[in-house]
Amino acid sequence: MQLTLDDLDLAAEPNVAGEQMEWVDEWDWNAIEQEQERSLTGALIVQEGVKLYGRPITLASNGGAWFTLATVRALEAMASVRGSVHLLTLPSGEQHYVTWNRVAGPVVQAVPVHRTVAPGPDWLYQLTLRLITVAPPPAPEPEPDPEP
Image 1 (cartoon, rainbow, N blue to C red):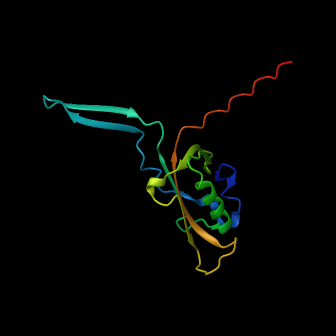
Image 2: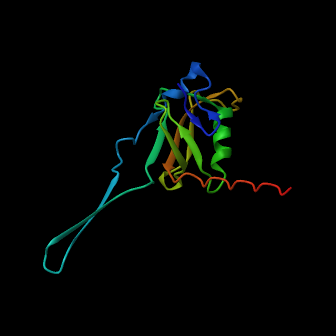
């Protein structure tokens, strides 16, 4: 199974079960937005529409997946780019374009599995990644044919 964010394979190390990240808020989403208000006559006015993007995807280790410090640093580097859009591929094969959900808390939250003062690049961490779905990035413009 795979779990990737762009070309960063979070499940690359099968011994630490990176593909076992849990989508903790998967069922907290409602694709239909609704507004209710009262008219001057007291009648209820209900408006509904389909949300296009903005679904939170919070992936958490929850004791079932560990990641090396090197992976944590790679994720931090990705998260440091303002306005970046990434392709997330879940183990189910489902794909979403996402960006970092900065209003939900730390976007890359790492907790060491075992405490140490000076961790090396292979030291293990539990992770929480806070993402949110966005529109796919625009396709690049094709280059014009060179004139003969």
